[in-house]
Each structure stands twice: as structure tokens, then as C-alpha cells.
Image 1 (cartoon, rainbow, N blue to C red):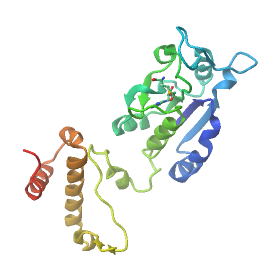
Image 2: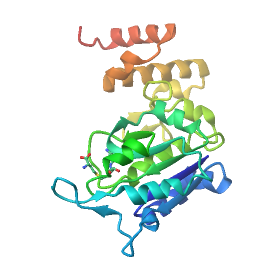
Image 3: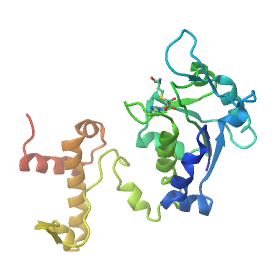
Image 4: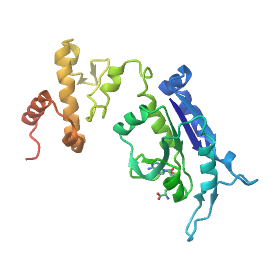
Length: 247
Ligand code: SAH
């Protein structure tokens, strides 16, 4: 997959894209990330990318010209079917959106700064706007890195063991199960007995039950939407008997 990132701070991306799974995916060629400086597409000697807002008000707004030119310069190398503006006004990023993006051959991520970008960028240049959540960042760079990281680990071969992706939180609509490693007892807190006994069926059932319990407690709204099997319904009844919830 190819991901083009447009930013005025290309330096932000160097270390994160070199580390861990992402670094390996890029080295192995499963993922290509090309970072371009929006200033290279400015049409004045000062390489300016922003201007004062029409109608007055604080701060600066990123201009259309350099952003349109930057995206258009990618025409030969990127299908431009997914030109995504990172924006607090966008759709909230979810694992379902991540899966959808990972199935595409490429995408462009546009990072805003200052007071944001000229409205016409969202209207006439981008196919989508994505938000990390209901808070405001100082720029789209960290949001773009989140998208690259989440999408990158969904690409075939990036995470060595696919089972690890499938048991992650949200992959099947609910939170992931609790995990433990050695030692079996730490400051008097024990690892649950079932995980230490090697009965794979009992472990599978335990993990599913605890994933359901965590979702029910911490993210009840996910539970309401999740596809539940017959076994899930039984496990939920067991949980309800163990710790009755609000009626
Ligand atoms: N004035 C804008 C916020 C601009 S913040 C508003 O009120 O909506 C500057 C840039 O940071 C944005 O253009 C966007 O690219 C990025 N950004 C800020 N918050 C974000 C969020 N929650 N998700 C994704 N990108 C965000």
C-alpha cells in the first residue's frame, strides 16, 4: 500500500515511521509512506501556505492553492480515490474505517495546522474527513500517524501472527481479553488459574468471557452493537449471575 502524507512539518514523521512494526513494514515494502512538504507547492517566494481568514478572527487559515497543487502532483503515483483530511469535524476513526482503508491500494492524508484549512479543501479536494476524537490537536500530523499505524498493522504480513490482530480490541466489535505474563504471582496478585493449566478450550472460553465482561463494564455502547453468538449470550448470563448489573 502507498500512503502519501501532505504536511508543513515533514520532520515529525521520521522517527515514528522508523520504529517497530511500521518501520519493518516499510522496510519490507508492504507499506510505502511518502511525506511531502506542502510548502514546496506554494506559488510565492516566501513559500506561504496560510493567510488571514475572510471575515476576520484570530489566527491563519491554510490556503487552497498549495494543497490542491500538492494533491494534483500525485496524480501519476496515487489513485487519489481516498484523499483524506484530518479534521476534528470529520467522522470519528474506528476499527471498521481502518479495515476499509487497509483494503485500498493507496490514500492521501492531509495534515492541517493553524486554525485549520480553507473549507473548499474539504469540499472539492478531499473524499473524506477523519477525526481522532472530540478534542483539538495543534496539527493533523499526529492524527495522520495514528491512521498510518492503525492501517499499517492490518496489512497482510505486517503483524506476524494474524490471530493477534483478530483478538485485539474492536476487531470483532468488542474489547480484547486481559493478558498476563510471568511471574504468575506479582506482589500477591495472581494470574488466573485457568491461563496456567493449558486447557485450550477452557482458556478460549475464559478469554471470550473476560472480553465480554470488559466491554460490558467499560464500553456498554459497543456491547449493544456487537454481533453476539449463542455462546456469548450464555457467557453474558453467567457474568450477570456473578455480578448483577443495573436492572
Ligand atoms: N479551528 C479548527 C481546528 C484546527 S486545529 C476547528 O475548530 O475545527 C488544526 C489542525 O489540526 C486541523 O486542521 C486538523 O488537521 C488537525 N486536528 C485537530 N484536531 C484534530 C482531531 N481531533 N482529529 C484529527 N485532526 C485534528
